[in-house]
Picture (cartoon, rainbow, N blue to C red):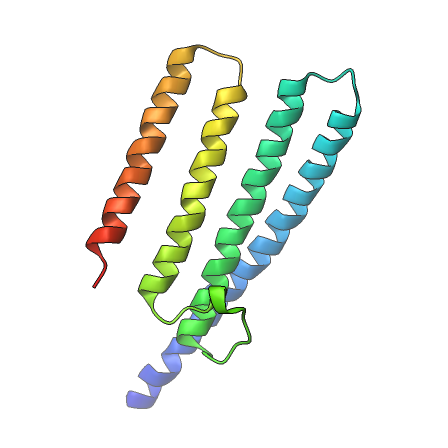
Amino acid sequence: MRRLVEWSRYVVIVPALASIVGAFALMAVGTWEMIEAIVDLADLGAPLKESVLGVLTAVDALLLATVLLVIGYGLYELFVDSRVALPPWLQIDSLDDLKAKIIGVVVAIIAVLFLGELVNPGPATDVLWVGLGSGAVVIGLAAFTLASRK
């Protein structure tokens, strides 16, 4: 029974690899969207707001890819092999480290989404509600981070 429990940790390889493959796919999509946005920016006839929105969409995809990559590396490092050669800022020693890194990138994604709403044409009340919702989520994540510190 003990051996089965010890070996069960290797099941985490599946979601870790799925996260890493998903990150690569999103990086490809984000890179393609960034190239399209740069081409739009080079076209002097294209509206600036649409071009900026394209850049923000690409950045959003790339940040989400980063989240998936951090999750994949973190799960692998925590459950399978802690000797993976990663840069010091990406080394994860506990689930709390993984949560903190993910929360940091999620806050960046929320900021990008808010900026996307800001440049979108629409009523100012929409921007206000998105801003209030984004701020509430960021405050909640900050409170969670502070409450979970040891």
